[in-house]
Image (cartoon, rainbow, N blue to C red):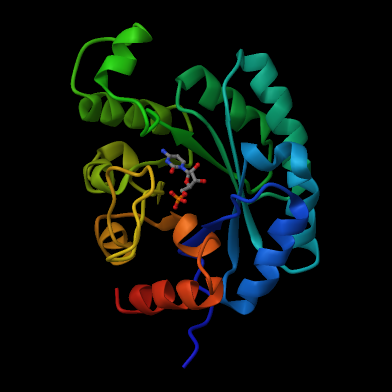
Length: 234
Ligand code: C5P
């Protein structure tokens, strides 16, 4: 039995260039409808790949740029990117950045998703960056609330934070997208705070982002199908 694609599953195309990205998308075929293209592929033809996946294959595109700059520059960057027919775009969750991005997208139906605090950072990294005292998780919640207030369409959050963010009044009607998802028994790689696909959705995520468990699998389509089977039961 083969499960149809499910927009809740976003596959991270973390491969070096557009050619390999296209080859992976071809292997996954009808099993995957939503792809994330990140900074690592920008110089390898990432935007051309986004156009091809969208225009030729009808896939949805999440461009993970994590933009951060003065408002005027963010607005210009987002205005330019909005011509690429993207579905999701990430910016850092600072309110001035989010407001500028919301302005830059104009009338386009491109969701602006805010990054709160990178999951690779711990308290000592925040100290080094002169970020105010407090538990990382509390700061994540505060930044998520402020970003959504400033006009973000949603946030990127670890599965552990999804339920807490879902409970915020500011999160009503907003999207929560969670990376750090691992099917039971899969290798963690460098991800520390993980959940299974089903758990992440139950905790309030609208979409999960899965990279290595699919893009490094010997049989990527079978790996995607296993996750679709799990999602079908949620
Ligand atoms: O291979 P893996 O499933 O860990 O990939 C997760 C994807 O989500 C990667 O593209 C990574 O850059 C991204 N991501 C993340 N944690 C964040 C934000 C983005 O893992 N906080």
